[in-house]
Length: 308
Image (cartoon, rainbow, N blue to C red; front, side, top):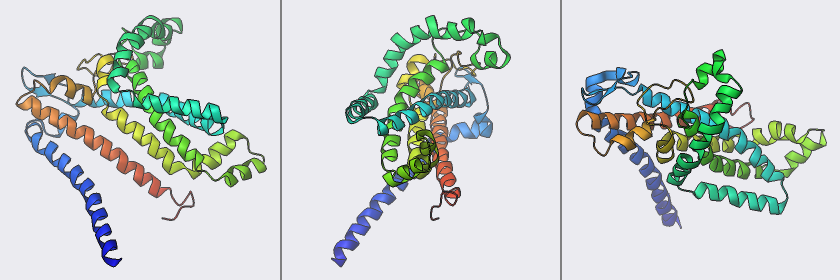
């Protein structure tokens, strides 16, 4: 028994260590292959807006800004929808719960390229003919000081808003499924106690269910965030693929993942090194978000009554 336990412990330790070594290896590989870019442009590569393959001048800021904008739009749309959907599924009758849960799980199984094709042939024309004219002209938001700067003036159906909508549809099933399972794990006694002291369903959800399952909820959010940061094909179809700084949600642009997909096949020399540098930046962004999430959960654990 003792030897078996030791072998099992060593195997588990080796598997856990392998994950860390793989992560370290990816960082090293990207760092080595992007060394020429960092040597030539330095840290200024991060906020440079240049992208001129003819003169071998490159900057990462349009890609970073586009990635952050599409991710922010997708989270702003998907987070509240996934939260209320998960709450409803927990309280819904059995047949409704089963049907809608299976539908949400099926959405998560759709390949990203299918989302991209649907966005290109269905969503983009709808945005161009109905949604964007309604927001810009009918409501007059494009002429208002703050909304005009946020949306932009010109629209053609493509751009960051369309890409954000596609991404929100892609990450919503993951976030909703995880939140649904977390809400189901809340002990019935806690809910009944909240209802017993006069709480409404919203108050019980906000003050009891969410606080009890905050780790799982944030886990679902960051899983969706990770997919939104690195999504390629769906964004590639509808974002416009313009190497420009975002001028508004209606404007076209690019993301790090879209730039890698568009340019990597024919890239060579310094441009290839630049693409590796963009990959390193994307990996660092994803890794930094996860580290921040764990730090936040640890720093606020005492307020939730958890053992630190």
